[in-house]
Image (cartoon, rainbow, N blue to C red):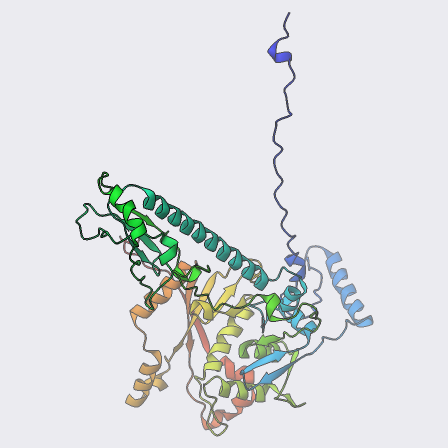
Length: 483
């Protein structure tokens, strides 16, 4: 009695075990790293519940605790103004890390955004530069191997054609385009046939001479010893035209071969990182610093009061009033002189009014120069998600002072003249990167009168004269927005 098939145990000897995927490096806990929205020490009070009298007791205990043991004093960070780069530099690594982690302020001088140059250099063989160079070298070697195989196949094909029966052989090789054509004549008396004194030399014997423009010289004449080979093959049947071509994706500069057909033209790309600097000397010093913009610096110095700015190569701390005058002058290029009077529509006044407005609303404001806008608005920060809104700042001269005279109207027209084509192009760029365009209008106040000169000493009253109006714009597509 034979056992039933259902009782036979299955054979798992040939079963393939699924390969486990390589584990990715563990992502840092950004929620813990960037838990503080601003570089400030905040001590919130307990929640007040009106119908619960115990909440009042909790608030009172919190007050008493802070009175008995006050919290540590808020640290003051230092920055240095550079007139050469027209920006603020924070050289202390601890301060730079805190400013980035608590509010995403600044940009690494040797990094794209976050100051991670020292971490990337400490990874042996895993830096982004080394990975890029390795990938380019592998791609280059693959192209060279593929080109060499195709060239060997062409040479083998030409040798086979030379030994086949035919009336004549004519080879036309283009070294620059990588095209090799083999054409045989149709009759012994045709234009491409060889005479009785000619012979067929192998492809490797005459492919060497190349003219300056890349066109090969004609093959040398054959000797009398090879004339018999042609005479014996004249009566054979005629062969059809055949051609062998290189792949069109291969360029001449990728042929790093010793063949004289194609002169090797190597790409002048950067050397690998191992050739640029010796590997025996470890990088222990952090050569990167944090670079702050004018708006970020003034917000930290004036809005939060936790950043002190030093002048160029000096130990003098600039007060906020002097810092404001300095940034207003350096908002122009080249910077304005001290003798010129400040104007209400200085670029720094408008840009900082917009920056302070969105920062006070809880947005993380970053530069939007790579998307052709002024600012990018992040909900939490660049490490969590992409920017949701792209802000374009536009000055608005709605006050009657700017339309009082003809000269004033011409000046306003030159400063605010925009076309619908500009708006359409700007909106098209933001729609491609999936961002909502926001037009932020800043109402420019008139210049201060004589009885209002005291406002210049009060920075809060000075910026209170500016009003912010923002409008969200969506791209209008005729095919989809048709009524």
